[in-house]
Length: 382
Image (cartoon, rainbow, N blue to C red; front, top):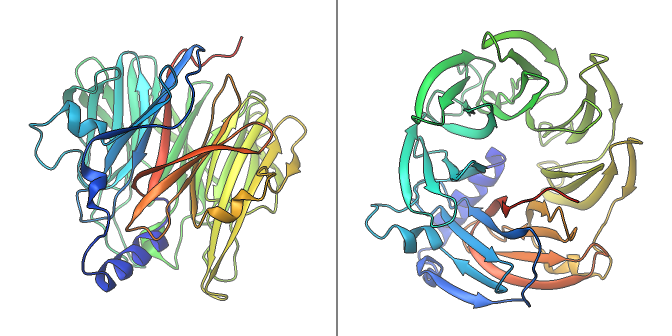
């Protein structure tokens, strides 16, 4: 659920559509899409968000050793779990032997065995959003309050500290309004505060939490309606601002954690990104209520030089097949690029695999609103 605009559009479309044409998406099924590849990366999971209120979050898996893509594999592994994964999948992560799926509107994190997907437990956190791991703990952002659009919304969010051994919340740290993504750099947690429920009174800060004391030590002004924060190996945070969908466009900012200042404004819209080495891969579906249209782009930024490499990494013209680019990931070994298409937000989406040359290799149908990836296996490059 990257931005509230998507949810609103999905609800409107759902009202206008009395039934779905592709309910088959909820039947676990396998389809062969490519030849097997044998590297230290065994495969990857795709978390499909599903529409708010529908309990249609699903999990897919692509197996490199077989070339087979499996849809709705959580349901297959856990046939006795009521309502399956739940309502709106928002983030995905692997830590140790466990896979963690953040299910936003179901107010929980599903914890599974990363190989079998057997459910091991759940962590209850209200309106949970994103997850990161550090030295035996999971850190999870929470909006804390209900889903309500209100410019005077008074409930600030927090970051929950979860013991990964017991799956218990052991501490909380208050941050700004509606905190989204978070990143950990040198024993500090950087939290992107959005204020998304307070339109037009968005937040514009990054909260900095000292891990040792688990206290907020600083608020850094960046830009309004922050979404994503990713760190590079140079101590720089790459931060996505969604803007206000009217006169303030989406943008990417580079904040140097050592110099304590913004060092670059890229003037590139963004709605999702993936860090791989010194490359930040960006997809953008920037909605404007002025033009009532989306601006779509596929960019790569060199994080070492802080320069734009390309505004379209898809080189064969097949970007025209993608209606709403929504999620992105890059295989750390082969450098294949994966882009998901949310389509109309109520129908099954699609996953596209591009080689590092930007040429389409294969594509496959997914669940509704495919948005989040995690790779399984040793993902370190040689």
